[in-house]
Length: 263
Image 1 (cartoon, helix red, strand yellow):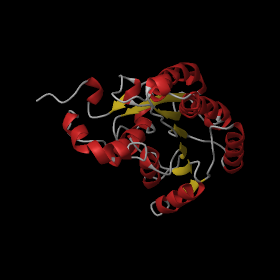
Image 2 (cartoon, one colour; image 1 turned 30 degrees about the vertical axis):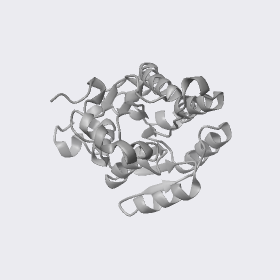
Image 3 (cartoon, helix red, strand yellow; image 1 turned 90 degrees about the vertical axis):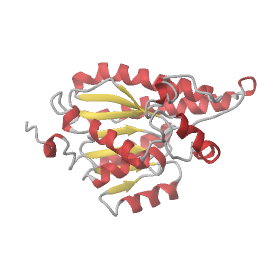
């Protein structure tokens, strides 16, 4: 294979699925894929938001929306059925859809804990499992299909907020990534995780509205993450340059998981 950048990082012609692709981190990744020639399917539970995002992203390439609740057996089965009818294979799966729930320890509800675990962990496992026939159809160890799981730096260190289920779920995502990477390598899949710090999304809007200056001042690089940061890493992880990279959890946080800014 050529070592020219134009070939090492060429992702055009691939087929990708991005869950939770209508906003936030999922949309950042989907936008990067679409603009670089990847036919990208996005899903989200909210139908209108999903359709609107796909319409906007399609101005730069090919983006197709299939609204679905992938945390349910019915929603996941219908989604897999639709994709299987349209595509002979899937090259890339980005498991991004997630949920958070904050509450004091003494009052933390069972329903909230279960919701976070079901969406953030179980849905990643079950969707990856159910898409295996498409992910492995043309995959080889020399030219693998890619799975990217979206974790969090809250799965690498203890958060200052009371998001007990969220942090635990993201730590589980990181370990599930390693487990799947080992077990699925022989089938021609690489599995890696991105552990983001703060990025603009609906989940973080309330924190950034009140404390953006504080968060940026504490970050070693002095800012929160951007769409370029997120799309750039995702594109790297699905490019020919990373065929031999698997089982990694990559913190994308300006160094925050290491500690606060040192001046």
